[in-house]
Image 1: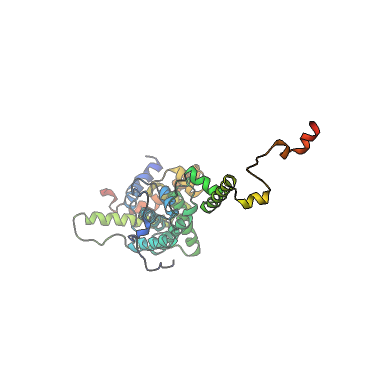
Image 2 (image 1 turned 90 degrees about the horizontal axis):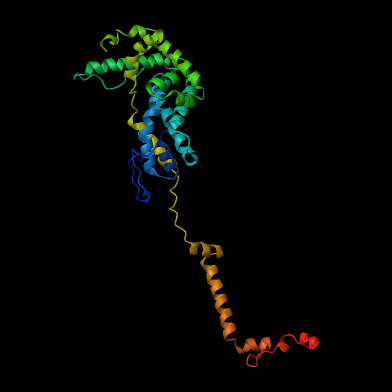
Amino acid sequence: MRPAAPTAGPNRTDPHESMPMPLDENAESDEALVAAYGRGDAAAARMLTMRLVPRAFRHAVRMLGGDRAEADDVAQEAMLRLWRSAPEWRPEARVTTWLYRVVANLCIDRLRRSTRSTGIEAAGDPADGAPGAVARLVERDRAAALETALAALPERQCEAVVLRHLEGLANPEIAEVMGIGIEAVESLTARGKRALAAALRGRREELGYDES
Amino acid sequence: MTRAEEDDDILAPFFAAGRDGPRPPETLYNLVAADAEALRPLPSPPRRQTSPLRAFIDALGGWPALAGLTTAAAAGVWIGAAAPDAVRQVAGIDAAAGYELADLMPGYLSEEF
C-alpha cells in the first residue's frame, strides 16, 4: 500500500471548514457520516476513521491469519474505497456491512495470491509483573491460539465464524456481507466451529481452560 | 451434552479472549486520515433561500435584463405623456386638434352613411 503523503493527521483544523450543523460524534450514524463526508465535511472523516479503522483492521487480521502488516494494507485500502464511494453513497446501504465485505474480498484476494501466513506476531503488551499480568498472558495466548486455528479454516468458514462469534453480527447481516443465504451462513458457522473446536480441544489445559 | 454444545463449551473462552481483537497501529489512523483529506470533496456552498421576487427577476434574466425593461417602459411612458415635437412630425399627428371618427376610419363612414 502506498505510504500517504506527510500527514496533516486527523486533528488538522481549517478555518474554511466551518460546518453549519456540527456533527454529534455519538448520535450520527455511520451512513450519515459517510453522506456528510461526501459533501466535504472533514469532521465526518475523522469520526469515521476512529470508528471504522479498528473494525477493518481487526477483521483483516483474523482473515489473514494474524498477519498484521498485510491487515494494515487491507484496512487502508478498504477505507480508501470508502472515501472514494462516499459522494455516490446510497443511503440504504449499511456502511459496516459494506466494509466487512470489502475487507473480506481484499483478504481473499491476497490469500489467493500468496501462501497463507500462519505466523502469529506478539499481541498486546509484554508482561509487566503487575497484578493480572498472568491472566492477561493467558488471554493473549488464547487469542493467539484462536487466530492460528482460524487461519487453518477455509476462507468462507473463517469469515462466517469471525463475523458471528467475534464481531457479533446477526446471521441476516452476515448473509448480506457474504452474499449468501441465511441457511448457508448457519452451515458455514457450524462447520467452522466444529473444526475450531477440534483444533483447540487439545489446548484447553495448556491455555488454562480449566481455570476459567 | 450434544456435540454442538460441547464445541460451544470448548470455544467460549477462546472467543471471549479473541473478541477484543488486535488494535490498529497509530500509523494506520494517520494514513487513513491523510487519504480521507486528500480525497475529500470540496464543501458545497450553503444554499440561499430563494424568494418569489428573486425567482421572478431570475426568470426575466436577472438584474441587467430588469434594468433594460425598466428603461424601455419609462421611455414609453414619457413618449406617450409628453411626446416631443420630433415625434409628432414623424407621426403626422396634431395632438391639439384631436381626432374624429372620420379621421380614423374614412372608408367606413363614406359607405354606411
